[in-house]
Length: 439
Image 1: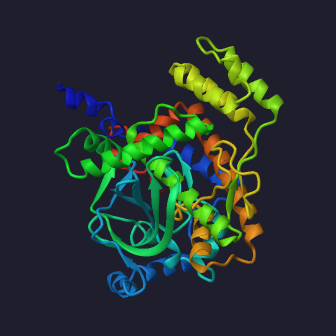
Image 2 (image 1 turned 120 degrees about the vertical axis):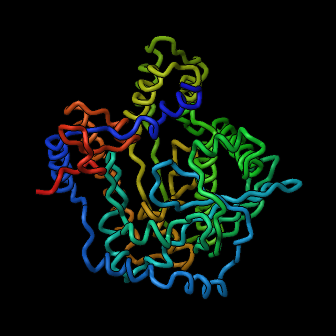
């Protein structure tokens, strides 16, 4: 076997989906239905929501052409998406340019509120759902896939409506020279997977090499600055592709909430993360120092986030998981609030909120609406509470489902990354989604 073949065989795509029999598929379905009932997770969309979604996907090209009169035309700007190999919708795209003293970074987000807005069936359904729920190999969408995976997906070689965050970022300080948020029409040149992004970074002959190299250079600086400032980085071994997406989305989210709070002074759906008490931090740091091969300088105890970052940097993979668990045990839950007071402790941001994932999070959908309308829904406080509660329920359901997978002898990580299929006694596939055959 060649080196390339061996490398491919080690990937999720190369290994193929996890195989289960029909009986186990039924057990998994029963468990999902039990969790859906317990946490009021809506697995099916009502007919009126599906009908509205289908109607909004008609006449797309003409609608986009008409929208060009009211939007910035960015179709000539080199633009691309980077997502996991199994991504079903692409809600964010990047463009970048280097200037003498600044970088211009464009983060283009699918303009979902053009199609989903207060008064629509899809908006009401999104409020009920709160977010997309991701169980291993089973997704419960916040918005109908008929819409989310078509007109709201920034697929390559198609004109799409976007909400663009254009940031002029100073090279010396990485702070904002300027922020501009506007409706646009974009045209993605290519859809990259994380693996393809890594390949583009390595090979100067491949398309988008220069753009990816430039945006990684910026993202890497942003990442190092965040750590230096005291942002908690629980996963220090992220590859370059993940670093690009994470840092660019954080910067865009930060830009939007900076604009809303300081320049407009409006309420929005801010993400607030309280800090652990000194006693809680003390308990976590003591637990970490007791791990084999892990040490924390005594001088770092006054800056626990930096202490944890240092410990994670030097830890082996076994200790890495234990350090992460020790920290997460003492971390309060982040929640959505209409006021950013308190900031986001883990990120060490004074003000933070979500904007970059309106297809899968209610908070981002609402912030898109607020940015464009420069007004807030009357029930914003209730919506903040709703989004917080639904996220908590989704995370609990995901944790319980993963536990159940382990109880029945399945590896949740493998199922999540490789998918799942139901096979018969001869090994033939019955269902590619792992669902039991219908009676």
